[in-house]
Image (cartoon, rainbow, N blue to C red; front, side, top):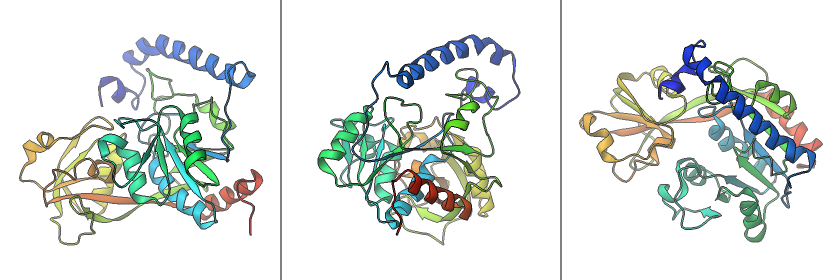
Length: 326
């Protein structure tokens, strides 16, 4: 994190107040843009199947991806055929929209879409133009519902269900909009979404991130014979949560190395720790498999929603006529 990003999760400082005029400008522009879509002055496109948004009002590290990794199989268990769309931040695909496949590289797909495609048995399509992605799915995929990984603020896209993820630890930081704070929209926006879901915490509508084991970066196989001390390396929005999870798993951390979210790793990034055991997240691991060593590992985590959350979500799916029950 840079100086500004670190200030977001501390009490308001001089830097915060210096940036507030820019936050006011951000609010004016984003509010005007949203008003245009809600008033019908700007066109909203509607996909051929229902769209479920999994998003947030802040930036980075809220836990959307683990929830999408749970949500898609859940919808499939209900008998729905699912596709996922994502902006594909950091991707360099040969064309857009781009269908991420097992032949795709992390560079082409971006880290999160690559991870989604490797874990999920459904089409994953990336592109900044979400209408083009939905049209691609209509022409090439037989699906009943589209899950949008992020896109809560993409108001040109009609959505049938809005799910907003909130990090129970960091919440809304200092409560300010960008760039004085981490928010893209004010917390009042939560009153308009269909479901506010807490990542961690004790609310009824929440999920916990459960450690599912240590895996080899090289072959993605579960491991039991790793050295239980090493260096934590991450390029994610909330590295402290990851590091706490490693420690809870009994791993002693000799050092913690942070890169910017979505950092494109190279072997040189690890030169200082050439002989150390490396622990990283699964999102980091997919970018390092091509040059990793045998003693590099990742901690796999999986979202475990509360029964209350699953029950409420199913009710909403029926109410919105996305799922018709059995």
